[in-house]
Length: 63
Image 1: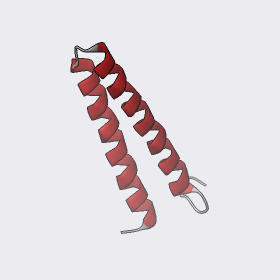
Image 2: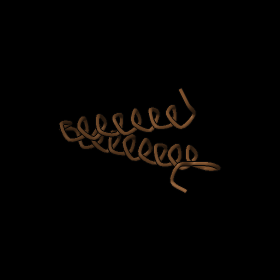
Image 3: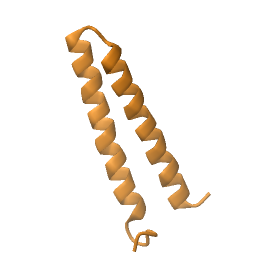
């Protein structure tokens, strides 16, 4: 598999993790637990964005 393909898979996995954390936060009734899951989702989302930008740097197909 190419580096771009691996980066795409990693980004997809991170997006899925963000979605899972968001869903757990929505179902959680404890406000502190909800906040914890929301923060984790936000952090994962930021990490996914960083991976996406790293994956296309220096020869990405978007050029």
